[in-house]
Amino acid sequence: MILIIDFGSQYNQLIARRVREHHVYCQIEPPDIGMEAIRGFAPEGIILSGGPASIYSKGAPRVDKNIFGLGIPILGICYGLQYMIDSLGGKVARSAKREYGFAELQVKKQKGIFSGVGRKSRCWMSHGDSIAALPEGFVVTACTANTQVAATEDIKHHFYGLQFHPEVVHTQAGAKILANFLFEICRCRKTWSMKSFISHAVEEIRQQVGSDKVILGLSGGVDSSVAAVLLHKAIGRQLTCVFVDNGVLRAGEAERVIQMFKTHLHIQLRFVRSGKLFLRKLKGVTSPEQKRKIIGRTFIQVFDQEARKVKGVKFLAQGTLYPDLIESRSAFGGPSAVIKSHHNVGGLPKTMKLQLIEPLKHLFKDEVRLLGKELGLPRDVVWRQPFPGPGLAVRIIGDVNIQRLSVLRKADTILIEEIRASNLYYKLWQAFAILLPLKSVGIMGDQRTYENIIAIRAVTSDDAMTADWARLPQDLLARVSTRMINEVRGINRVVYDISSKPPSTIEWE
Image (tube, rainbow, N blue to C red; front, side, top):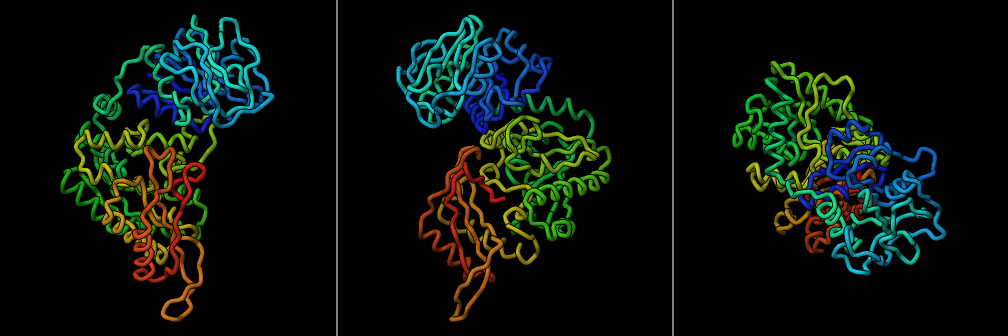
């Protein structure tokens, strides 16, 4: 495996994705990880990520310098390179010219990490500091017009550094450079696959659970569904799934879940109708972070109550994914900025009575889909579009109540019906409706109206780390708008979101 040290870059998840695309397992850990833990991972190599801090800033993130004595290859990227150089006796200084965006990389040594890479190629820079002096043993292997040390290496000690970002698609030879580090330098083998994951995960689950029982929060989405089938494969009837109707589900959600898991998959399922409780606690709450935390806490409270009815339950299982942990950051204690807390990460109360088991917590979404396919789940479940744990509560901007939920449910149903009819459902990462906290003037039947606005969000993506707005056909958008305004009482305007991630997130809240 490859260990990635999180120095705060929002590109960290991309580093992990790129490594796994080469069928090599990797894991992101915070810089305050101890040497004992690092040795416990027994990594074939370490990648020091980029980050927004200056190496000389107060509170700049630092990892134990003893990593440089482990005798394993280390790759520093951007800030990671600067930390390596500073730690080993070199010098980092403020650049005369900051470098952001595209730059022409001039490779001086087409061996090692640059084996098979052309003399000139395009790379992506994002730095204000540069290497002013190299430690003993280091040589320059690439440069740009503004950066003398765009890449460096100390072959004797297996240290490599890149001032640019090989993990982003803008760097032409990025995939090749990372592959060279993984296979030519670290001598990794391509052993990361969903088959190997299943074998390892089943054994790990059995060891963790023993003869105790597990209760799983089942939403019917891809994540919890795959987690349920994986757990069922590992421990069989020791697993009880609980489906909580939290009052903020889409139309027909409960019926679909019961039909799939109870009837088709024969997994033990308990149904809890708690919509009134959730809505009562959400009354008057408009902050998205508060909504998430309230739903998370209430969810666990309901689970605690339900768990008492099942004798021997010791574990609560959740379909938490790697992006949930990365974006919430609190799970790592790392320096990356909090983008948003997730209901199954930031909202868990410290007093939770059940131990947590998260069998998918180191997988990205596309990996979970591959896992589901490997486990034999039907296409409709495996390729189902993501749905947030807090449900429609975070697709209603502002106060959540029964009337506003009814409007959004009907509008969202129309959108999905039309997208399926156009054979676009499986081509989109997500498509959904958002109820805005605004009203606008309209005319219906020669009369003035002052009613709600629905926003449509549709995006394409590979793993939800980045996303682009979908160029839906205009006639499809026209049909959706016409149907929403004609069929849903309380809507008189429909708008389309044309922003990408970043800078926007996929969900509005």
